[in-house]
Image (tube, rainbow, N blue to C red; front, side, top):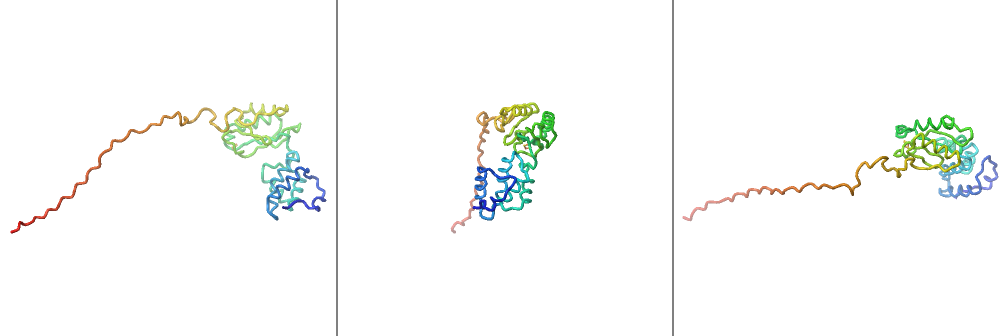
Length: 232
Ligand code: FES
């Protein structure tokens, strides 16, 4: 297991993990063989982002790089690749609005306009009170319940501009917002009615039995008869 050395601990950084998170850091690192500790870069960045108010600062990158004995630029490359990592400060409620085709066809543009109007921010912006930030992202993997928005770790689905605005209001007022489908549909069940009847309601018609038609008999080979000359 690779854990922090005394020398690493002595290095003063602008960001350090809390004692509790440091235990998690060592746990993640211990999952990988000696010399492969860089494999823990994503969980460490995630931990650092959560501790750092939702974004990965340069100090977080350098601390993760130090703990994993990686060049900071390598850690930065990972953080810059995934949209789950924010490289600049975000709001307390970070809104990731899916703009990919299924969500776009189901009204994602309306949601975006309503959100920008409500919070008076542009895409990538943070509201004046620091409570909300908005980012458009690619498919969130819940297309059946399009349009979809992710706020921090929660999904909000089957939204309309009205239901989305209500969620923002609830969060702004310190209330719990209802996660999942805004229309109350169960998981990804059909939105309106069932598209096919359940098998129990379906009468299974069995085709009428065909009359067995006898196979034509093969003509029996004619017996060869040999004329036997009568014994003379
Ligand atoms: S397209 Fe929006 S969740 Fe997949």
